[in-house]
Image 1 (cartoon, rainbow, N blue to C red):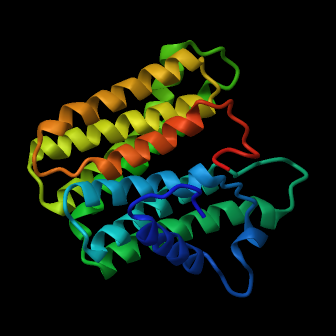
Image 2: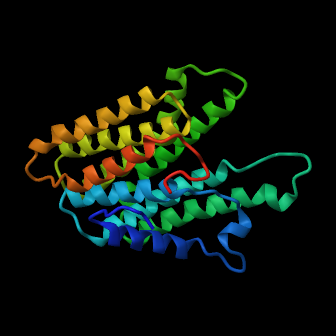
Image 3: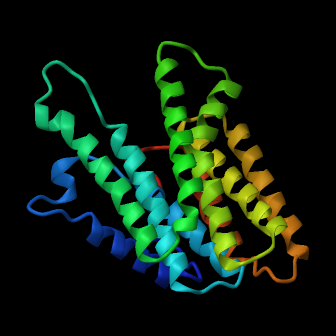
Length: 255
């Protein structure tokens, strides 16, 4: 449960409940197949961003909730695939489960697209999966290197910001707002993902705060657009800014 009063909290809880139902496999539960540690921010940021943009743009339809789940499936699938290991002494089932479970989650995102008739979003979603994988490859190739700030930020852009930016843009597109507003939402989502990723990489606080200020500036620039209800977006911004003002601890992040 998110310990803040989002104005769209009921919808967010419904999305997260649906996700829990979808990842309960038979005869095994999700946690028995893969050990995916998901802190509160991991569970919250993507669905909350989709729902906040949707509400800000005046869209209260059920398709926005479905889109929130679809984005989260992609995020989880990418995280599960990163669990793959090739240790010589690793049991075969432990080697294969992350591959199979990750592929299943990718399948669920596609089935959900079909179910709610959002197949027009398949192409950009497929492209962002490729972009995130590019980031993973770049990270793997850099394991033995000391990355500079710009190189690390580039990887974070690929792995994190690409998905949050697309989540915000597709939510705005689903709401039927103009292309300039879609671009504004995309830019906000980009900075959200970049700040979150930089924080998780334990980058200097000044870097994280600089990115957050850019996100805030985008919202302030959007205040002149009369058709936007900015409060849900500020709720997400303030929620994230509060978390990113603390030191990253993967055991308690977002708690």
